[in-house]
Amino acid sequence: MFLPGESHFTSPDSRGFGHVDTWVFDLDNTLYPSDARVWPQVDERITLYVMRLYGLDAISARALQKHFYHRYGTTLKALMVEEGVDPHDFLDFAHDIDHSTIKLDESLGTAIEHLPGRKLILTNGSRRHAERVADKLGILNHFEDVFDIAAADFVPKPDRGTYERFLLRHGVDPHRSALFEDIARNLVVPHDLGMATVLVVPQTPDPFREAFEQEAVKEPHIDHITSDLAAFLKGCVLPVAPREPAAP
Image (tube, rainbow, N blue to C red; front, side):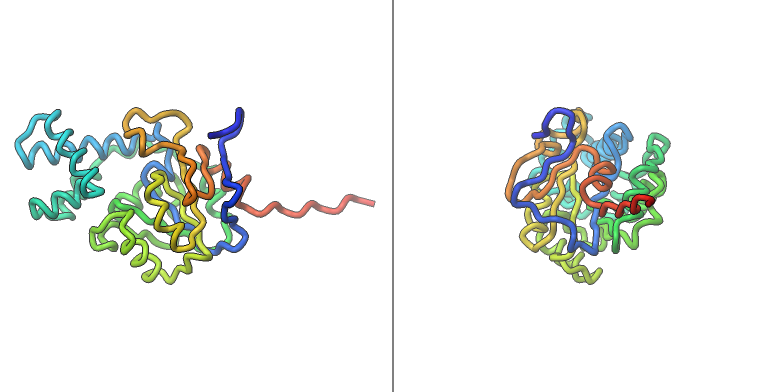
């Protein structure tokens, strides 16, 4: 996908960023790298929740969890439908993780700070989780708000209604916005709605995620692909400062 020495790809028919005044970011595996070890912890907590709920061993619980994920989009949605689980209880349990593995990302913070316009987080996780992770990254104060799974009435992306609810609540014009996401299928509806789309992939394969979740797919609904979000924002999105005139 990328040429040697490069970390970005832009489709020939891609939407640019000159018109964008609202920048929307997914959280997990988008705003932090895989070595932050955030998602593996959350994933393990979800497995443990399933184990305790059904009285299963770890292997059986893991298999059921992945079945739920593929059928419903999230394990939470499955457990709400099939077991009437309290979503707040589930989220509090799943996101009770060690945040010490998350490093301050000054480069990303600077890039996000200088984006012209509003910045929002759109996540299938909880607000508390998003705020704690973004705070550890040193980027929380650059965001206007978080639209979490509770705001989406617990209907996860990529459901079209979730994106429409987000756009309406925050008064976002999709034709003047850009979305950064780590899963290709979550960009289909946003692109259809008019958003510029950026797929964020890991720099090296992440053994804790499924292959389809980190694939740098070349599809019409993906305008740009990057494996280095901070560098992409600085080099491909932010306007180049005019040069000072040479001294006479």
